Each structure stands twice: as structure tokens, then as C-alpha cells.
Image (cartoon, rainbow, N blue to C red):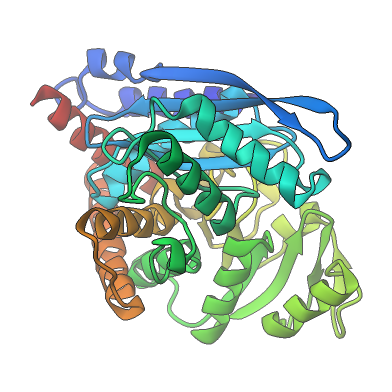
Length: 410
């Protein structure tokens, strides 16, 4: 399987292939084939037993034509530089698509955070900031949470940055707890932003009524999406986490399922549902399929078996370029990640803006602004795809690249 960065570059090549020379300059495409810089660091951490472990960390700063680098930090045993580069590239496009004045970055540490105590996790998080503090800053590079990083971790990082630099704006890290300068509405932003985009495009994509939804992923994004779609009258018929999933054709009670997982430690055994594998889940007949976990879950080997009418990508890069082609030919609409899950970075931008202005907006203000921006971006991308006679993904890429190119030309 291709690594995520090769997939990202295949998408970039596809844009070059379908656009005319005057629209997207070939030299500009060439400059986007590498990040501005990628940094690898080693982080020594004193463990609870007195030993010292060395962890590998990363920060990729991809492109800052539109504003400071922006992007999450993920803690995962399989995190490596190519994944981080791909995510930083997509982040640059995501900010451009959402219409926010920020660039693309991403960070990570190769670690299984579940194996660390709270103290070790805090030391590791502060160690990442210590090694990178000179490149970070509210007007340089603004990290945020991602897979396995939490508001608490962001608070530790913001505190460490302030200790090192004396900067008291708290605007260098977003996704912080509200009491530490975080924004209202940040927890639900990715799932809710995805719903706003989907809802604004639903009829244009041929879905007339409230439909059946299947979700892969039961972390913050997947669970929020499940609750939001259910609240709006949709039936979530199947959902999964990393261990597997559950299916009930009549719809699942998401709140009760969350309580069941908390007490049982897994989704299986939930009353009235049958166990389903992640592989089977992706192939269920449904109206809306929402991959909300990891990259490369729909590939050329299973794309032909997907029976959804619309795919809403709340994960980053869940569909490989080869699978994209197959799904496009099958007439399955994909609302791409760089649009669908940009609600998180949009509210992160709001948080950064509030911190710099020393303001605090109400949740209603935040979500009203989010809805407006997501709906506008969705309509622009639909029109761009229609005008270029291409997929929504390519429409989103063209729009984003045009905006970055214009800024780089000055």
C-alpha cells in the first residue's frame, strides 16, 4: 500500500492533469511537492521507574502563504514522517478551502499513549514543546489536538511554551480547555462542521430525505457525528471502533451505546445489535458512509464493494486515489476530507483569533460562524466541481490551490 504522502502527491498530480496551464501553474505545483521544512526530534523522558526512554517526534511545516502554519499533533505507535507530511499538506489545502488565513502544518510523536502514566505523558508533551519552541508561535506555527491528544495535553503545551518564551496570549496552541483559553464549541466542531456541509449539499447530491448512516470510528469525531446525525432525524445503523462494530438496521441508540462501551470496554454485546467487522461495515448498504478513523480504509481492493450513495470523509485520507477513481465511476459522491472535516480547524482558528484579541465568544456565536463558513465552502466546491466537470475532491483541490497560488504570486 502507498504511504499517505504518496497518496497526497497522486492527488496533486491529478489536479495538474485535469486543469489547464493558466489555471494552476506547473511551477507552483512543483513547489508544493515538498514541505517548507520537516523536523524530527528526539525527546528523552524520565519514566516513573527512574529509567529514561527516548521518543521520536515530528513537526512538518508545509506552506504558510495564507498565514501561520496550523495543524494537529498526533500520538500513535504508527505515526511516522510520511504520514505527518501528508497531513500537513492536506492541512494547507483545508485552511484554503475553509477560507481561513492560516497555512498547513502537522506534528506527532511515535508513541502508544495508553502505555504511559499521566506524569510520563505530561513530561513527553512538555518535551515536544521544549525541542520545538523556537519554531512555534502565534504568528509562526499554531499546533492543535489530533489523534490521542486532548485539551489537557494542549494546556500542558501552552503552559510550557509560556514558561520558555514569556508569551501570555495563549494563542500558540488551540484545542485547549475552555478555562485555559479554549473556544466554546471546539469539541463538536469537526462532526458538526461535517454535518453542516453535508446538509447544505444533500439535495444537490440526490438525497431527498433523512437517510441511513454508517460510521467507522467511535472516537471524539465519530461519536459526535453519530449523535448529531441522530438528533437531526437520521438513523445510524452501524458504528465501529478499532476492535470492531455493531449493526442494527432499525438504528442504534448512540447515547446508550456510549454508556455500554464505557462499562463493557467495547461496543460488542450491545443490546439489540449484531457484531460486525470494520471490513463488513464499510460494505453495508446505506445512504451515507462516514469514515471517521484513519487513512487508507477504502482501497482498490474494497471500493467496488462499497454500497453507500454518499461518503462524508471525517477522517483524513480514508480513501486511496485508486479507490477514488472506482467510486467516482460508480457515481458515489465523496464529500472530501479537506472540506468535510475542516470544522475542527475553523473553530481552532476562531480560538486563535479570540486569544489574540483577548475575547471569549459564546457557543452560539462560534457555531453560527462555523455554519456560515462551512455552508459557503460546500457550495463553492460544488460549483467548482461542476464547472471543471470533476469530482468534489478535485473541485476542493482546485479551489484551494487557486487561493494559495494567488497569495504566493502576491
